[in-house]
Length: 470
Image 1 (cartoon, one colour):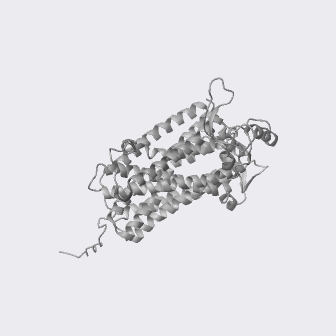
Image 2: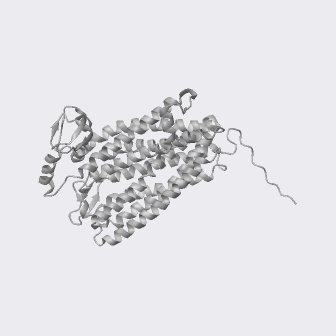
Image 3: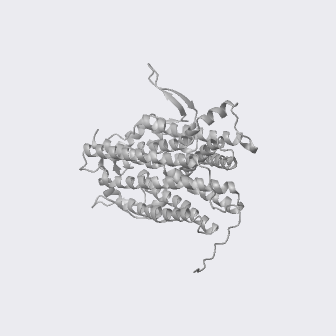
């Protein structure tokens, strides 16, 4: 493999691994804050115990996410120094804001929340976790704004003397139409991941812990509602994002459907298979759906890959501007399919547990769902991962669309041997971190849920007065 291919593989491994923890940190912080708010209003012991369990999961996830996020940022200087030199003036402010929020705001107030459970007044203690939840959203927005510049560069211009991108308007960077559309879509997907994790843990423990069954039922239903609402929001925001994507990167939408010829009333294929002896793949199509997803008009014309390739050659010069079509096609469908499956399971769980009902081994669906509970958190997380793989690979051959190509961004002095060694090191360390995180999650989930405050549900006793004694 060349240095370019190894650099892309290394960045993909680091980024995909890091993103496994990002949506969980975003959603678990908000879910912990929400559960604690309900306890603060009602003093219901079930929500106190559910709050502390969600907070423990958040703490373990946040710690691993910080470590992997640091490595991801170092990647720009390690493997992509030419790109960092070009992009630094734009990416620098966003990384600085995200770093300040992640390390000084989120980490500080998460520490206050964890160590202040028995020292802060309940209202003040609740405020600390809400600061963490809001901080994660702000961090996510500025990072998505940096990524949106790579999809649709606005607010900056290339200095002809230095060849570097110079940020002209930070406000334009933050109001990029791509980030305005992608932020709610990303956050909705994050809530699906956190909700599915709580739903799986709650359903799993309800079978084995009859004493705390009310707490586990609350956890399962809160997780199921979060997954269902998040899945609905993902579909609505994804529709808006698809129209923005078509407007700024029409090649990406064409690649998502493997649409080579410009077509009106374009259908969307649920699946396509290349059969022996057939010139065209067999596909199961939904008529007019692609035109609607791309423009909002089911009769509209969607540009094909061949026409766009000719247009880009005239605009940017000779070259191949077509992304890897099989990856774009299948990641787009896996993203949608896994998300729909997770949403459907959440709806089923809510229906089967309505009005105090319980799962029964005699129901075929209940039996298989309980047997494969471990799959539930994987579904939305995998859907989000495939979504990012589609977003980044279908932009190729550009790092910054229309301005900076991928092969120009690699560090010029890196050798394949150095990249292979660092990739092996990252894979080893990340493998250890994965084992540690999974064991922590299982350890927290298996223990009896403790109340958030030792005096949960009752008035706090006054602290004893210290007196001198002889």
